[in-house]
Image (cartoon, rainbow, N blue to C red; front, top):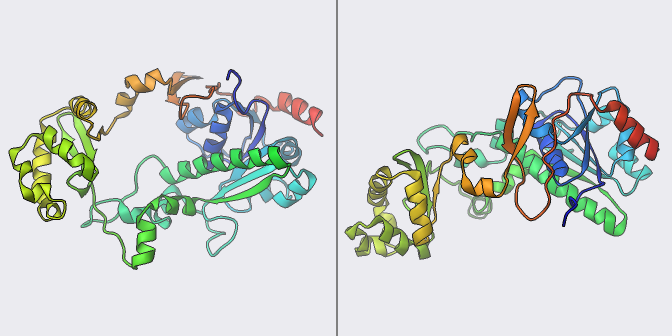
Length: 360
């Protein structure tokens, strides 16, 4: 496959936040013609703009959003409920789709289009907490914590991307688009894995476990940072063999029913073992002995990572201050378009002539 899978697909991005920009960035990376209707006030930081806006054409906020939406195949919009009404001059998505049944509209908002919190605004930490994830992050004896990197906002964008391509495929097959309502709160709740259904079924809350769910499933300080292990029961013999402590052969550690009673002692052994080794040494042992070790990577580690370089994971984006390396293709196997960073409103004339001239 030489051509990007979304080549020729027109995407209109409306809204200034991370979720919308991230969803549209992946659409652009897989070849879509993404046009961003720049907001009157930019909410993205300079670094976020470099990462999220590369590969997109940008039109001035005074451009006619309704006409652009009807010229698009997919509209990605969000930030707060009702934004599409504001941006499209009080034209509802249903009205757009009545004019163009194949149109796909994806709305990404904090709490969705309806429900008790639909009119509320939310930051990343609010969505993170309201989705339940904060009940699992941090040490049990302290207040809950939020993870770094605006996880809730980016997760909403990831779901928006998946919804957009899925609904667009449906429109190609049966000619009918969709209006997909995505809630950041629901996206985070979907990340609870067993803890959400478990709490609903048992009626009990899960205890925050900090860096250790159990000794064989946790993160430890090592010689040059942090590393960890996530060993299933079938992987315990290999883990104990690598650690090499003779006491690990005793029944109190080998017996899966008895081992939890000695988890503190086992953690102490792992603390000592990890502390004597570097991240790379631990990763190499994992590859050799089939033990699921992992390392906590710094940005510098990631830029120097041979596996990511082999996959051409990073894109080089030219900025006014030089070249920035940003995350690019999420996986190999499909063509990826790195894209250039355009100035705000720089493509207004060309886009209006091309889109509105070709499709009234």
